[in-house]
Length: 375
Image 1 (cartoon, one colour):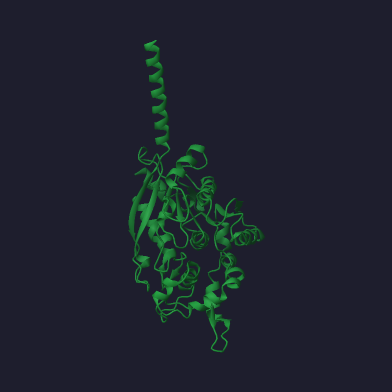
Image 2 (tube, rainbow, N blue to C red; image 1 turned 180 degrees about the horizontal axis):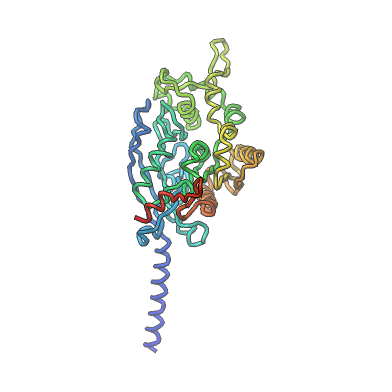
C-alpha cells in the first residue's frame, strides 16, 4: 500500500513538474534599456534624446540561439509611456503574461515586441517629426529599428516588421506605416484618432484657439489632459520656432473684436491637416497597397468608433485590403485584448523566415536577415 502511495505521489509530482516546465516554456522575458536617439537632438522643448524602451523577448529566445524573430513596435497613447504595456498606465494587465496566454492558445506566434517611451514634456509626441518636439517618427522608424536590429536577433526586413498602437499610438501606427513602407510591412491602429477636420475641429475649436493664448508652463500644467493634448498636437503638427514657450501655431485663434470670436487661422489650419490620417491616405496609396496587413480595431463603445469606421470606409473605397474589427469595450477598456487581436493578425501576415526576392534578370537577392543568420 505504501509502495502504491509512493508511486502515485511520484507520478503526481512528475505531472506537476512537467506542467510547470510547460508553463515556463511559454514565458518570455522583459528587458529594459535606454536608447539614444540622434533624431531627438536639439528639440525646442528640451526633452532628452535618451529614451527608455521595454523589449519583450519570446520564450525560445535564449534556448534557440540561432533563431531570428519578427518584430512588432507597440506605441502607447497620450499621457502614457512604455510602462503602459506592463501594468503602469491606463490599461490593466502585463504584456508578458498576456503573450504567455496567447502563445499557449496558439493565438500568436513567437515574436519580439518593442515598447518605447514616447512621452515628452507635453505628455505626447504624436509620433511626428517636428522642430519643436523632435523627430519622433524618425526615432521609431530609423533610430530604434536600427538599434533593435543591431542588438537583438531580429529578421531585419520590412516583411518581418509591424507597427501598431493605442489611441495616440493608433494614430502613430497608421502614420508610420504610410511614411515608412520600406521599414514596415504591417501597420495598425487600436482606437486611433484619424479625423481631425470633421471630428476634433468640430468639437474643440475654442480649445485650439486657447493654445495661442498660453504664455507659461504653469498655465499648461493647470490644464486638463484634453486641453494639454491640443497643445501637444499643435506643437507636433504646426511648429513655430518663433513662438515660445510652446513654439507652435494653432488652427484656430481669437479675434481682437469684442466679444471675441474663434476663427480659422488658414495657414496653420492647412498645415495641421497635412497630418490628418484620412487625408494622408490619399497621398500614400502605394504605401498602403504594399502592406502585408493593415489592422483597424476599435471598441464598440469607444468615442472614436466613428473615426475608425471612417478610415475603414476610406480604405474600402480605394480597394485597399485591411482587417476591421469592432470589439467590446470603450476607449480604455479591453486594450490588452485588442492588442492581442492585432498581434494575431500580424502573426498571420509577417514573414517568420528570411525573404528571398528575385531581382531583374533573374538574379536571386537574399535579405540581410539570411546573410546574418548564415554567419
